[in-house]
Length: 196
Image 1 (cartoon, one colour):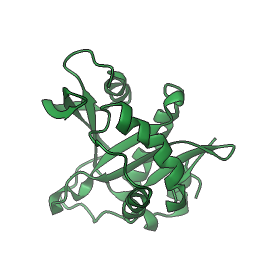
Image 2 (cartoon, one colour; image 1 turned 180 degrees about the vertical axis):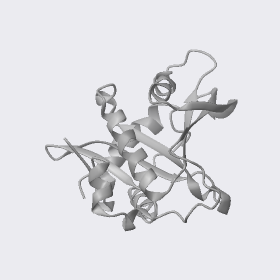
Image 3 (spheres, one colour; image 1 turned 135 degrees about the vertical axis):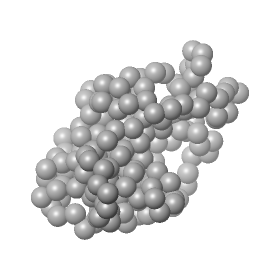
Image 4 (cartoon, helix red, strand yellow; image 1 turned 30 degrees about the horizontal axis):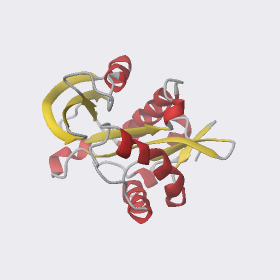
């Protein structure tokens, strides 16, 4: 299995991985599956600044992960939000940890100081979300930074979100501008376990 940078040409296979999360879970708060063109545009837009990675084995895409802006105000520039989606039959096999290791290393190389993850949870037992993602982030050393108890309504239920954060380094008084992902040297990709 290899991890590589995604391409807009991967959009169809990645959308097939993402669609069941939209239609069958509250893991994403989207109601409608994006169009192929919209999904392709999301990949292109992300790659202008942030890593967007895929895992591939024997020509099959197994999942994807990326970071993106935590907010759109200038002061947020050194924080990024993580997202990860695996083929649903492949969860729990360590691929998520490999993706997060890669995202953390690439984010450090870019100059990101804090990674943030927004995770759906339910106040009561629900068929649409489990606590697996909450446990996953704790295992990887993320700290719970806050939660909203009932901020999303989907499938006739109210869901909350937990915000996790992880510091990737020190917090200098004058941080240098973020290095866009396309400008990272190949050595940084290799150090993160990503094929250049």
